[in-house]
Length: 300
Length: 93
Image 1 (spheres, rainbow over the protein chains, first blue to last red):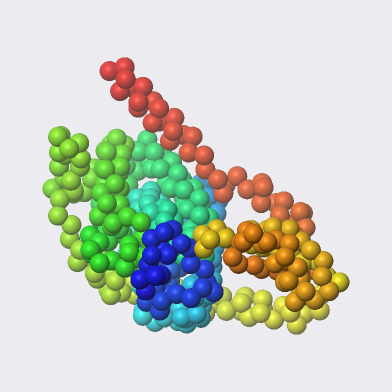
Image 2: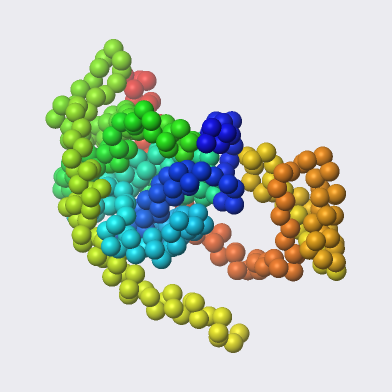
């Protein structure tokens, strides 16, 4: 392990067919599996909004975003399955059985179009910041290469999110109220996406999967998004929000981590419905996969 | 005789990169020739050979439609314009 860690510290990149310690393989696999699950769950939520999205231009963007997210799921499940810990089918079975994790933000319900705007803006920005921090110094080559592509597409989603928010901020009082309501629901889950402070012995940091501590990424997000939301005329739903003039920094006050813990145990407000819906979707689309699997038997 | 495409990877860092091609009668001969032609001075520490007739090549007409999907892009120009306006407002007040 010492030699392997020295190789990683020196900027070494691990490939799928390289020897790697079992602990490293397991930790990287679990991280990628959770990312893959999150893309799939996120894509399914996005899909729910295709018929409900207002306006053709936005609707086409939502179509593109849905395809992106499902595509990310495909890329990541492939990278994860190649690590030969679980097959793609086993990962999906575990997801549908509630045995494996996906990001906290996909355990909540998107109630209005305002929620979709808040998600595209706040959540996608948080996810993008996390992914960029992994990409920056990722020691697992196949994941790093896939992240490059995912990050460029997530950038599209975030620009889309801010554009939508700007339009809502310039809209009617009702539209502004709808968005403020969404912001009240999504600000904290988005912030909690970064997770609690990193532990000193976090192996993901030591093995160069993550390049930055959770609390540092979270703070950067706070410093960026608090003033931005205020500049659009919205209220940040943090009762203890304060600004330190000297340090020039925003402080959102104490963070309640209980909601995050509940989502990690599949006990979030919308967890059960979301998992069941993903499972139903998997069953309903089985005929497509079956037809494609049999394509080889069809004469050209 | 087959044509083989050569891919090299170096130093446990880079990804595999296309380095060239060669002709050989068998996989084993191709491997030896690749070693003696492409990594004579350890230009790579990993080597992949792929038979050219195993490469499936896309027809440009298949790919072309994706060049015309403007809804898959967002230049963020409206947001950038707003930020610029805010900066100018701040500078003038």
